[in-house]
Image (cartoon, rainbow, N blue to C red; front, side):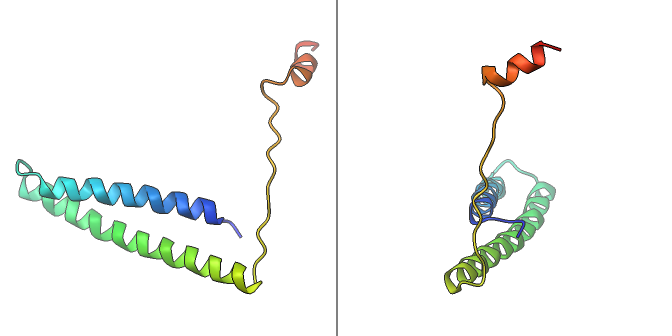
Amino acid sequence: MAETIGSLADKISIIQLKIFHMREQLARADASEDHKAACSAKLGVMGTQLRDLEDEIGQLISDVAAGRVKLKIYRQFKMYNDPRYRAAKTAQ
């Protein structure tokens, strides 16, 4: 499973922001018709992407709830800002 619920939620929030701002571009009184046409086309693609992501997160949540998929917890092992790891590097 490449995507997690969190990564999908992140992508959904980003595309929703892009859609919001693209709609603002369409509403601009000073924008040319060419600009509005390009924005409208991009908005269509973004809508498709949003629906795909929403379908994917919905399916993943259903699979987790039904027990078909188990979520894994990936721990982060950060080495920076830890003097124990810096000492080995400076000794070289």
